[in-house]
Image 1: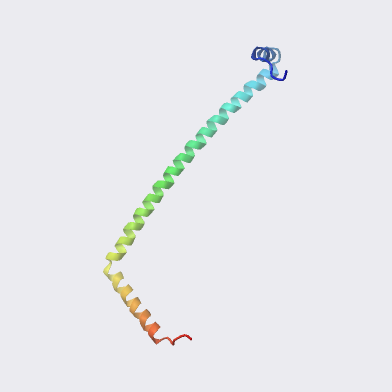
Image 2: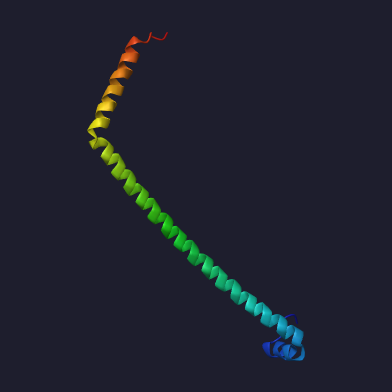
Length: 97
C-alpha cells in the first residue's frame, strides 16, 4: 500500500527524527510560500490601483489642456494664419499630373 494511514505515518515520524524535521521544514516552507503569494497579490492590486489613478489624472490633465487650447485667442490666430499660408502655398504650387 503506497499511502499509509495517518497514525502509521505519525509513528514513522516519531521513530525517524530526520523525517519529522523534513516534514516540519516543508510545512514552514509551504507557509512562507503562501504568505509571499498573498503579499505579491496585494502588491499587484496596489500597483493596479496606482496605474488607474495615474491614468485618470493624465486624462483629466489632457482634457483641461485641450480645452484651454480652444480658448487661447493667440493660438486661434496662429492657427488661422497657418491655414492661410497653407492655402497660399497650395494655390501657388503647380498642379500635379
